[in-house]
Image (cartoon, rainbow, N blue to C red):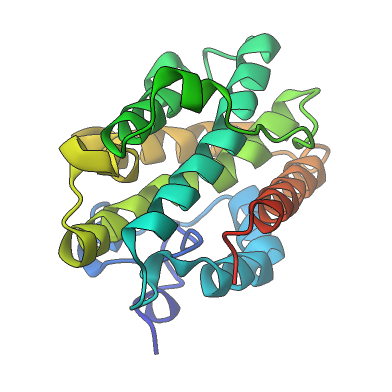
Length: 224
């Protein structure tokens, strides 16, 4: 049994790619999750697991070339998604401190790519729709949840590939010491938004985000 299956009473569904660490799950007191969070966990559970199984970041035969292709694919999704969120003008929900593209650019440079090569990387054109705050919260549930997984992944990548924040792994610890604070702040905003008239749209957006991300990764050839 995995750690996250033992702790489903917490306020976190495990992000794709990883199992939760006990210390992260216990970093805040257990509280009753909001209704919308319960709905999100239930609706995206299968997509979580499917992506986790197919992404090779935790596979024992992961090598540097595969890792670099994954980071390139992540950039190709996060960059246009960040631009879309910025156009939506949502600084109160997704402030600049949540921007992940600078860390991805730093990692790509560390992995040997030039600015010109980064600019030439393909970008996802089939992003999840963003027309309201419910859409944004659904998108953020997926992408912010994945930052928690980075706390586990960075240790795996360091052990297997000797890659740390200075040599191509900053994205995996993009929030650093603020990871817990920013996750709790997101959960608070999600709980404040919780309303029967809007919750289904939040859930639809999260499911659409998962599907869009999975299709993109499939198209880049990084999934198994």
